[in-house]
Amino acid sequence: MSNKKTVMAINPGHNGSTAVVSDGELVYYAEEERYSREKYDANPFRGMIHALTKYKIDNIVIGGTQNEYPKVQWYDRDYYVALIKKYQPKAEIEYSGNEHHAGHAWATFYNSGFDEALIVIIDGCGSFYGVPGREQEVGGFETESIFTMNYLEDTKLLLKNCGSNHTWPFDDGTIKINEWLGIVKTYEGVTDYLGWNPIEAGKTMGLSSYGKENSKIPKLYINGFGNKQLFMPQYPSGAWLNWALPGNEQFKKESESKYKAWHNNEKLVREIDKDLAYKVQQESQELALDMIKSWVEKTGIKKVCIAGGYGLNCVANYYYRKNLPSDIELYCEPVAHDGGTSIGLAKQKWYSLTGSTEKFPLKTSYLGEQYDPQTYLNDIDVDAFNIKDATASDIAKLIADRNIVALYQGRAEAGPRALGNRSILYDPTDPNGKAYVNTVKGREWFRPFAGSVLKEFANDWFDMAGMEESPHMMYAVDVQADKVDKIPNITHVDDTCRIQTVTSEQNKHYYELISEFNKITGVPILFNTSFNLGGDALVETINDAIDALVRSDMKYLYLPEIGKLVTKK
Image (cartoon, rainbow, N blue to C red; front, side):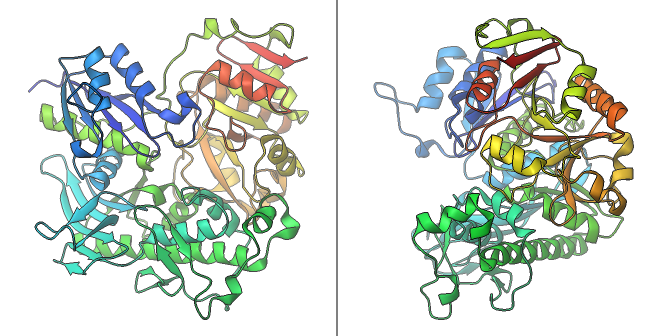
């Protein structure tokens, strides 16, 4: 069979996304929120339109089942099919069915480049699985799944845990269904209690480093699942901590508005809140590590792929690296959240169509839409901005003088991490920089910042735990002891830093900028945070970038593709 096939897949649901695989390569990926500016936008229409107008699509996979989506008026199909038919009526369309965790698994496996792998999916809530013939009384949503995959056989399911608010228990040795809270659902319960949307668990991860072991807090997980004396699941949504139950009085809080005041005021946070975040991080990553070790031992497979929402927990990912035997190879999928399922569905369909066993590992995270750099300045208000020529050396000097500089170039990054194409940059050596940038961005005081380091210097500054590089910012690694005081702005309270290693081949302009900063300061690292303001999606277009400048105290925008610096007057 020919490899000349182009497949598009979409993920309708939070982190709605569109992916295109052409001749085996992932050539386009975008999350809808970047276009619509609505966080977690579930309907990837804009991404679909771009893909359908740029590529000749042979096959299209829509995530989920056909009966999930309402029909369009005067048309016998749903709105996704209606949109497709207006652009490419000859493309073959199918639905993935209840394959949410499989979508995660296909994405991480095919992107890893491994010949064979053990796949570990740890997720908040995947597809609903009902026991055939007993769906109304026995069923639950995927929480953890274990697969093995290679290029010669179909995906093999070894374990699927499913949780439910109310069900009769079921266990056939592979599928296990019960009224339990999975690893992530419990983490979501803590996140909800701390005052955020359950999907914002990354904030809980950031706070966890401020906490400590607290003997007053009971175990959050019992026998591998969430403690039902503390948490109540709300499948398919989050979970909540029931402080009204006897014994849980210590968790009682004031009115929600008063309680949340600590989000932006460190003096108001309670020790129990920090300690609860610490405990859920520690217990969850220990459970996840035990699961990985157990299935490596059972299968004998020493190449491991991680995905599902918990796969974005860069603290846990580094914990695995530090505690797994050195002969185990680990790949953590950069688009581990639900958006990444479109990648998995597209890749799996491409392999099934072509019968290919050729590997196409993920080469880059820069997979968004490419805009014409020559149009960047077209809509900039010359009465509000100055525009002048600038080199990487000029920008490095600005940053070294402790100015915030936003960077906009090329294709947007896939996944939630800013990797130098949609980034806000600052001096990592400024001891007061965290509070400064958090204030400008409108972020909470406890959230850490990342560092982008020239790959050849990574081991000098960070404990890489045996890794040669970390190009997708998937690990919060230890800062070398003699370097902690040199980069206080990106060193978290626990002396870690989420890092991105950079090479010239990966990102020429960004590498050049970091190199120039190194010449001035002797520090081959830039402070890097996502180019957005608090609560906003990452910027997508140049107009989004200008809008973020207008609405903030940021002054500088660097456009390296055309060598221009835009400055607010």
